[in-house]
Image (cartoon, rainbow, N blue to C red; front, side, top):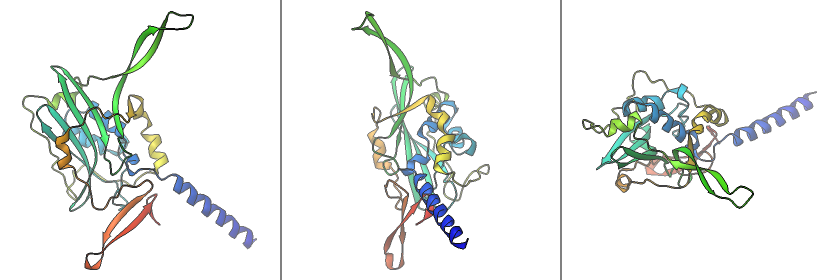
Length: 265
């Protein structure tokens, strides 16, 4: 009986370990919904309300714990403006002097009442050129080769976001460039960090955001003035599974500690 129970526990332990490994996202950024961020941006009246929305647990946008302290990271929002172009930077606060950009919402005004935008996942956290954008479908009629002389093909088109309240907010004549007042250990009173969800659970929670926003590899809007101000944390290393945390030891030595699925391995 003891042998049977020992074998059973061994099998259960192996199965649990495999399940936890499979539940680890391929990229760290997979625990932050780019589509969800756009959904919150679309319905927010200002960048302040947008920052609040992406940090609320019930909106199912943020599941990041990049510093592996067991609590969700707070995401700050900062606007960088040059001319009529905006880069809205979303950054995770990881320590007193540690800040990691998560994504940028790039906005371009293309006409008197026309603007387009994309959200780009940061290269440290996402696969190369991971982009999400709003989409709409337009039916185009072309000459067909079959029995019908005309063939109708649905085609995705770029969406004019000028009517979004937050876009109108940053282009208002009285607009003052928004920079979040919050920093590490200095958070809004309403915010209470929660424990990260398992990745498979989080993916299910943020699935509704993917209905009106889709991912693409095509970067259409990219403002060069942001690159010199990008924040990349010294404790986050680009990887496919888990998080590599760089810790300084005695004498300034640096060692890498790998975490997978939120647990030390």
